[in-house]
Image 1 (spheres, rainbow, N blue to C red):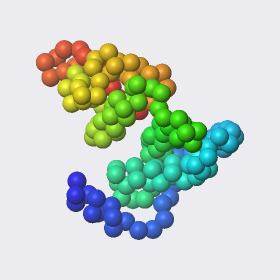
Image 2 (spheres, rainbow, N blue to C red):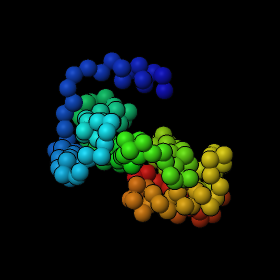
Image 3 (cartoon, helix red, strand yellow):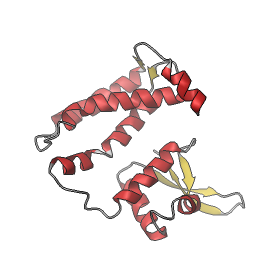
Length: 170
């Protein structure tokens, strides 16, 4: 991991776009720009498009060092960044998170994003993160994220050959 970060830190120069990634960004940007962001007192949403680009560049570099933003990089960036918009709006309005699932949801998403395959068996998620959610809360978090099309819930075979639930990002 350390060696990869050292290599990434040496990358210089301008990024290029895969045409599909640029189309995806433009479509997202036009939709996002048309929304009303007047309630944001922090300026976060005013600069949000820059954040999406920076995250896409980081995702791209985590996969390869060619400085080309691919469609998958952009899609992952948009999903990851949009997860923070509701929180940004609450902060801007001086409100804290009202969802009791918020801490567990953050842990859940981070676990999937950091996994090399962006996939985790339900039993593994519970085993690794039992202090953040029980099985009922995990299912509620997963179903909420699936309804938002942030993850997929699939059936996989575990090492014993049993069919078990798994979460896939995105």
